[in-house]
Structure formats: C-alpha cells, structure tokens
Image (tube, rainbow, N blue to C red; front, side, top):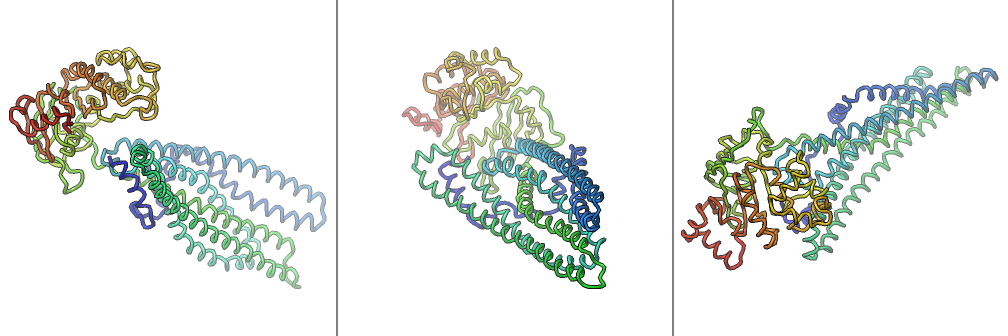
Length: 608
C-alpha cells in the first residue's frame, strides 16, 4: 500500500486537464444504451407496462391540442353550445386520463430505475470481491467508491428520467408531425426548412457536451479518490504538519472540477436557447404564411386551421427543447454507464481455472519449487525460492524490510500467483486449485488487521460464521485472553467502531488472534502479528500461541525473536532470495546474517 504522505500529493498533482488515465470512450452510443437496457430483462413486465404508458403519453398531448383546436374551429366558430359542451367534456376526460397515465409512467420509471441500479451495484460489489490484490494496489479507493455511488446514481438518472422522457417527447414529436402533415402539407414543408438548422446545432454541440460531461465525471472521481486518501492518511498528514499544503492542493482540485462544471453548464446554456429560438422562428413564420393564407381571397384556410397548426407546432418544438434539457442528463448518465461498465469489463489478472480442484481437508504440506515473482514486469521481488514445509511445522521468515517476506506469504495465501516456478499445497499447484477451498482452511493474522463495524463477538465470528457465542468465548479461553476481552466496557458485545477505532492496537490484535483460533485453520500465517501487543500481553499470548500453532503448518514473520526461536526452520531472506536456512541454534552457530540480526535484537534493534 502506498505511503499516506506520498499518496495525498500524488492524487492531487495529477488533477490538471489532460489527465487521460481512464480510457477515452464515447459516452453516448447505442451499445451502452442496449447494454443498459439488458438490466431491465428481469423486470420485463414492469418495463413493458411502462412502455405502454409511454406510448399513451406520447399520443395524449397531441390529441389534447387537436381536440382543443377542433372545439375552437367547430362549435365555437359555428356558435353551437351543445357542441361546446360535448367538446369540453371530451377534453376534460382526455385530460384526466393524461394525469393518470403520467402518474403511472413516473411511478414505474422510478421503480424500474431503482431495481436496475440495485442490480448494477450488486454486480459491481460481486465483481470487486473476485478481483485479486494487484487490482486494489493499483486502483485508488475513491475511484472504486465513485463507481458504486455517484456513477451508479447517474445510471439511475438515465433509466428513470432520460430514457423514458425522451421516448415520450420523441413520440410526441412524431405524432404532432404526422398530424401536421395530414392537416396542411404546405405549412409542414415550412417546418421542414428549419430541420437542417436543428441538425447543425445538435451536430456542433453534441461532441463538445460529451467531452465536457466526461471531464466533469472524471474530475469528480479524482475529488473522491483524493478525499478517501486524505481521510485514510489524516494521522500522517497531521503528524507531518501538511494540512495547509494538502488543503491548497485540494482547493486546486476543487477549482478544476468547478471549472469543468461551469464549462459544461455554459455550453448547455448556449445549446438550449438556440433550440428554443427555432420554435419562435417557426411561430413567426407560421403567423406570416398562415395569416396570409387566411386573409388572402380564394385560399381555403381558416383561423381554426391556423390555431390547430399553432398548437401542434408547440408540441413539435417543445420536445426538442425538452430533449435538449435531457441531453445534459443523458451525457451524465452515459458517462456514468461507461465508467461502471469499464470496471465490470476489467477482467481479473487471474482467476480459478474452469477445472480448478476443490481441496479436501488438507494436511498442510507446502512446497516452493524455483518460485519467482514480479509485481511489475522486469522487477523481480522473489528469485528462485526453494523449500519444503511438512505438515505441522512452523517456519519463521526473517529479513530486512523489503527482503520479500510479505510477498512470500502473499503467495502462500494465494493473493498472488507465482510468476515463475511452482507453489504446491499438499502437492496441488496453486494455479489449479479452487481459491475458496484453500482460504477456508487458512488463517491470517497481520500486523495491522482489519476489523469490521460491529461488536467484538461479530468480528471473532467472522472466521467461522456458524459458530455460537459459547464457541467464540471458548476460542478466547484457549488463547488465554477471554478475561482481557471481558474487561472491555461491554465485554464481547463491545462495539469496535469503524476499522476498530474504539479498541487499542493490542486489543485489535487479540480479537484477530481469537478469530484465527476459532477458524481452526490448517495453514496459519502470522505476519508480525504480535508487534502491536504490549510485552505483558505478549507473554500471555506467547504461551497460547503454542496451542494455536500445534498441529498446524505455520508461517511466522516477526521482529521479536521470542516469536520465532522455537520454529522448526528459519528462512533468512535478502533481496528476494533465501540466503540462510536452519534452526535458530544452527544459524547462530553459523555466524551469518541471522546471527547479525540476533545481535541487533540483543541490543534492542528490531529484526525487520
């Protein structure tokens, strides 16, 4: 994991324009829309009813306008009271049905959008659970969070609002145009003369709006990513008095996001008035041409025809402006969709093969056969690692920081796969086994373990969800720390807070030890697991570790010599290679690197 001191400035110094680290894609394309609509398949009945109401809605407004004009042109112009009464009643009934249709159209759209977004978020979360550690090491937390929060919300906007509003408005335009063509072909040709202008305006603004809204989304993702890093690294920030520096950098980041947002809004502010202007130009032309035809002798045109056409013209140009307003939302929704699908389409660097072997209860034999590993191509971290661990043995890993100890246990835990060579668990190649079947038989206690929000009992039970309260308490007794946990304010029911913030480092480690004891793993990994435990508590835990390690294959990385003195074998690593191996006494007698580290320990210097 990156150093928090470096992480915050790094996130902030890459926020200027031209940051193209994410794939450049067209945010509005048919493929994205079709893929998004596939998520409505499980809700086909709801979607189909919604489409039916959309169709009704598209028909109703032009029919209302036509009926209104017909009443003016007929009963009112001919002075027929009974005709006016019938026309008014028909208009009222049609208007009432329009209100009912609008209610169900909006209600079903909201329900469908919520269902789709829930499915997408579940799919994102499931996909993230399958991604290997390398993905999380390379991807900022804020970017991941923004995909499942703001980007998914934008997709909801596309389904609930943009799609069906545009269908209604587009249908309304089509119906209005058909009725105008049927009523008066000459005036319809006048309408068509403005179509190239609308097309040209759309062609000019569409790519620019697309780019503007993509920049807004990407800049917001950088805001989220940097905020997450800043919160995670707040202790380091305050410890090195970087508050003002980071605040200034964050202000620059916010300023960039604000500027991107203003650019998009200014562009949209020019786009909509131009669309609206076309409607006014047509209305003026309609008054001139239609009025001339009404006034000119020998032309078969009435005031009713002009009123009819005027209403339908409003229903034709009104949707153009409404769809133009939705274009802003469409850009946002499609930008969110492409980013969500970009994450979902990111394949794991590796996964279980189709014919992966499900491990039975393992004995715990581990063999490294010429194993090498690289986090980045061309930069080896481990080289030609060879050793065999028999079931029940305890292996201690010793070496300076950066020697490869943690990488080695990451390979054993199958968080990564070897770049070269073979790693065998009970003679099964880790490349060919089912990861879950291995992890269910493995326990890991790290130097800084993660505790989930909940109680101490909940976090211990995380290692074995089916365990009852008595089994959890018994695991703590076996570890000789039940009294320490019961001394907490609410004992085993004490809330640990976010990331275990309400417990001390030592108390968190005790919870993690107990979690491992309850899981009863066949392979146990302790990565500097007692470093956060005070000396008095460690003395108690050290006695209990004997029972925890008993009968289990164990790998221990520690900077306290007392943790590894009784190991069956000590492996000394340096620059990714095993340079010494043997028992504690043998290595002391050899007077090599381990003996040097031992002398440092005696003088009070950590072995790491």
